[in-house]
Length: 194
Image 1 (cartoon, helix red, strand yellow):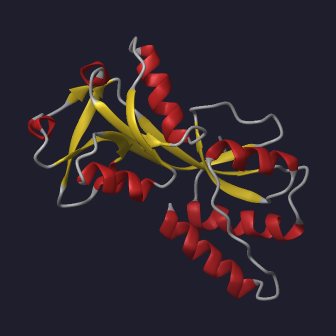
Image 2: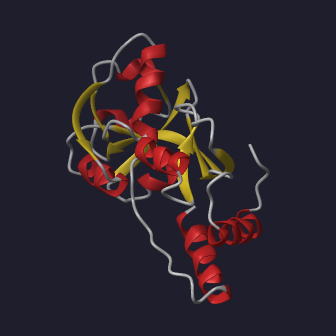
């Protein structure tokens, strides 16, 4: 999604050079609140882990499997696949509360009958994978985030987990510039409304 977002923003800037673009990075919950309240025109959010505010519409732009990222020399790195229940005692690294990935992890573990044993948390996905590579624990991450030589990816098969990423906006409060961006985003992301 990141490269498509950058391409879309570049195209938007070329089409509307007088409009100032302000980017911010927020966790899922505060970002959805800001969109619902009209403080932000549009955002890229994780969907499915928590309900969307009623004012917010979303268009899914990417679906990616979540996998277990483990340090290459971790005993779990030799597994062909793993179930979430197998991670009951594992030292888990995850994102901070309020992030979509954290909510997915906590909900899936709850459904499997346990609470994850979280030993470290961070606000940044790149840092999360760095902590896995450093051996602080294992992490449930999007497949693309674990593309490193020192991290092994183990598919999670029971249950299969996904990260669904969406472009979200509030149709009642989005500015004219925001509407123009969303129209251009339709061309670049090409996904049907959800």
